[in-house]
Each structure stands twice: as C-alpha cells, then as structure tokens.
Image (cartoon, rainbow, N blue to C red; front, side, top):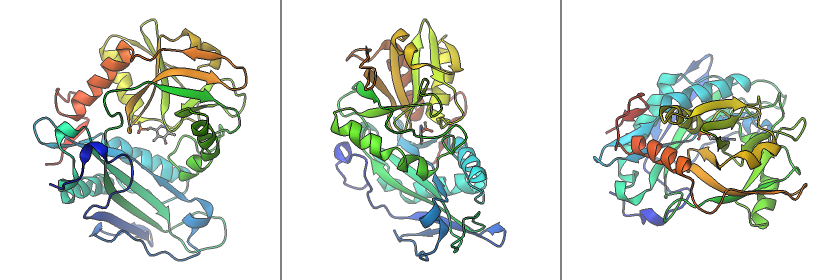
Length: 337
Ligand SMILES: *Cc1c(COP(=O)(O)O)cnc(C)c1O
C-alpha cells in the first residue's frame, strides 16, 4: 500500500503507476496499451488543442468495508462519453473498451486505492481527444482515448458541511442548443470567470441559469441541483444540463424512500419553497446547500447550516452501496478485486 496521507491529499493530481490508451485511426480503435508515462506526444496542429474537440468523464473506485475494490456505474460513464463523442463528431469508444480500461487502470494501481477508513477514493479520468492534425474546423477522424487515475481525499473532512451558493448572471454555462448536455471541456472554460468571482466573494459555487431567459435553474457549479419539497425530489430539466449519474442514482434512492420525483423546469422564484437543497455529483455525492444569494435581485434563500434529513439519508444510501455496506440491488457496482 502506498504511504500517502490519505485524509489530507485533497483533489489534485498524484502520480500513479499506469495509465491506459488507445488510438482511433483508419476507422478503428487500436488495442488498449498500458504505460507508466505521464505524457502524450502531440503535434502542434492537433485539433483538440485549437478547437476544443475533446470530452472527458469522471468516476471513482472505492475500497469497501470488506476490503474489496468497487467501481461505481462505469457503464453509465461509458454511455455518456459515447453521447459526448457523437455530439462533438469524435469517434466513440465502445462500452467494452471503456470499461476494460477503467477496470485495468484500477487493478494496475490497486496500491493507490485508499483504505476504507480514510474516506478517500481513487478518481478515474477517462479522456477523449480529437487528434487529427489540421488547421480547418472540421470533425476529427482520429482520436486518442485514455484513462488515468489519481487518489483523491474525502470531499468533506469532518462531516458534510452545507455550502453557500451565489446566482450570478455575468456568465452562462451553456446555451440551449450548445454542448451543456455533454461533458466537453469547453463548458468548463465558460464557467471559470464566474467561478473565480464567486470564490473571491466567499461563495463555494455559482448557480447557473438558463441562457435564454435567466429564469430557470440549470446547474450548481459542475454539479446538478435538486430541492426537496413536500415529499418530492425536484430536479431541473433542460437541454443544457449535464445528465449527472449521481443525480440519476439519487432519484432511484429517493423513489425507494417513498419520495415522488419531478424532473421539470425549476424557476429561481421556486427556490424559497424547498425545505432542503443540494448540489450532486461524483466529487461529493451531495453538497448540501446552506443558502443561495441572488446578486441581481439581492434575494437570499436560506436552508440552514445543518444537513437536512433527506439529504443525509440520500447521501448515506449512496455511500453504503459504494462502500459495500449494503446490497447492490441495481447492479451499479463492478467488484474489481
Ligand atoms: C460531471 C458533471 C456533473 C456531475 O455528474 P456525475 O455523473 O454525477 O459526476 C454535473 N454537472 C456538470 C456540468 C458536470 O460536468
């Protein structure tokens, strides 16, 4: 076992043993190759460098209570990368190749999967790059697929802590017919400015609104939003929201808990009607929201500094599956080793 200080590693890049790669050329994917090199050799005119022809994924492997290592919903990530590839006109990695690369990268870096007690995990970063050398703006018929990993610390040290969120209309994350519904790096590029401003002002996250009317909730930073109201789990629906696998899983668990599920447009004016709210994604599962402040209207909605009971139950329910503390009744887990 690696001797990293698991509780304090944070979310940064840490070198591991091996990463996986495959190349698409002349209409087919090469075999997966495994390497200890952390570098890729790229021509200066490769289109992913110029025109953002790339997409990525993020998922985690967990060492469970029984010592086994589990990957969570990797097939969903594979299918989402295929959807991203289709929208960006990039060659699609097969679900099989994607899954094999993830499983092998975990196996070959097994010493970097943090111990159960640490609350840390192994983050996997699949990446798809358009590698055609060109100057013209057109689809890349060549691509590189890679998967690397890095151990990451527990998102919340010392328990879940609700976050402060700000609504800022300075920047739209994604347009209704743009690339918001796929995991393209460019979506992140267009959220940096507002994200930096929010952090400077002391907020953890920006809440993005729909780009057409600025009336409806889209996403909370790089996470989906949900609110709880009268026994209902409400989460926004829009063509420019990235379909979060965490959100999808929480909807299932919420339904199992007897909550109703609503996926529909959620107006900013409805925020005050929720008893609890959260941001959800692979990184934290749930970041409960303490308050949301609207910079333009000066309205403040407060959910409180305590984690709400439904957020807590949903969080525990999902974590229990990831750490093997409860039955995986939906087949979300691959036991790697
Ligand atoms: C990755 C991502 C999420 C979270 O998706 P998960 O599959 O739950 O990790 C939410 N919003 C955006 C914009 C994302 O890029």
